[in-house]
Image (cartoon, rainbow, N blue to C red; front, top):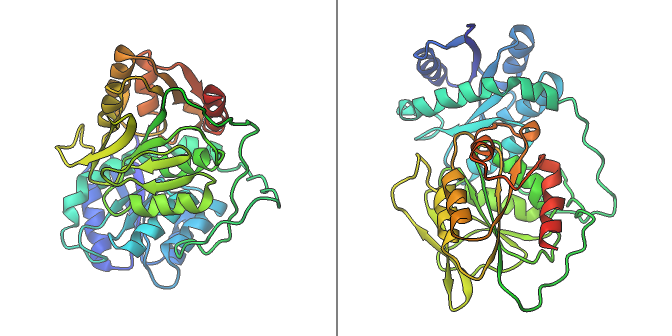
Length: 371
């Protein structure tokens, strides 16, 4: 079996060496070369055709975001970003995921992280997962994006994304306002590939969507706020990082903060968010299973559950409990559109899928189910 050939890119000679040393500890990975800036990275990618590359964001000559965008257009390759924990670093990372980066790993203590070994296992795991996604990436990248209607409403531009973007029109589904009846709730879980998948789904949900959407996206603390802000600028519904004790309203998507589990409870007939920092579940905090399990306890509520792209099987146990304790309709992302077909596959293999749909069909299907 051939090794995973990796190109390491960082403007610090020290970081290039340490990252290379970490990756080289795994017998399945071979670091084939190193680059000190985005321009050199592009040149070496074209010359060496690596299976995966690691890419720092802040570099001279050409930064990581500019290099990433050029690579995705000229020679697509699975990319794992190395990000700082600052607000600016989080915004840039969210933009990198929009541009096509596979995933990211945070540097524990800034651009020159002497303790980078703390995230060594995660870096190796992400590089391996990125290599496994290579065939899917090559199949998907040639697609040309359709032009957005000129009638679409312009969205605010964040500092991390100087490109002017527009809000995407809703699917052709007319949503009627809910009058009386039971409360409704949509719960959604995703991981690797999730930020871009969430953008695809949430931007196509109409403003008068008749339910709140509770979301767990596996992400470290500090990044979910930037993700929520970015999605809110693009979506017709409101998107926010949920706060403890907040009541859930229709037409709003609530993203669990990194580092906190997100549960939904009933208080005086209303749905309310409850956040806590109990031990991670399956290595995750927030955990999709914990969100789903909390929703399984809700009575007199109509429920829909969505599981999208991601490694592992988070969400399967929670969805199983939801089905055992009450009525819930599930939508599972089809393998054809998943960046990583782990979480969806686990749910499907467990016999929990009521509907299986590619990413672009999920918004319309969800709207029709709630119609």
